[in-house]
Length: 175
Image (tube, rainbow, N blue to C red; front, side, top):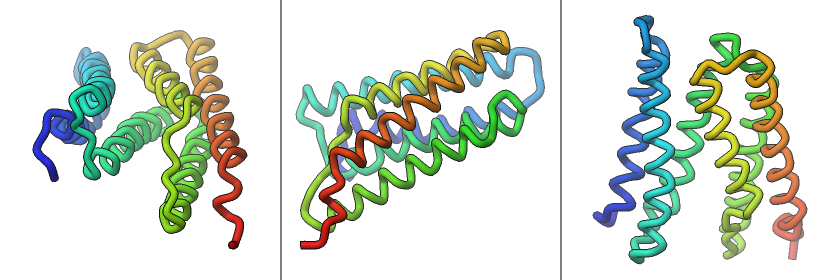
């Protein structure tokens, strides 16, 4: 692992995931707000590590692997907590999981063919929208807004997944 600031921020995000989970499951006044604070800091490290990696030439194989994995783990941890606590429909989590596995699988097939499928604009919008919606849900928004956030997560997830597959269907063609 190359030692650089971007990678350290990614590692910090991974370390924050169990801290976030512990805070989600502790039952003391304000524990969800502490979880929200940790989640926001983790999201900010995602923005910072990407900026630093690109602008200071700190892009590494470790970062290419761990950054999206850290994002997925952070988001899935939050969504699983929401399902368990009854503030998110389980089928929405299932759709998100299927999309993530499908896109990751497609990327693995592409790599075997010597091709890299970079994150597309819709994937970045999906990630940002999901992270913002998770922050809002953690903040304790009214049920109608919670439902809107769930639909935003669902629709951006489905749209970006369909777009990735539509634009990269040729990956599955045998040559």
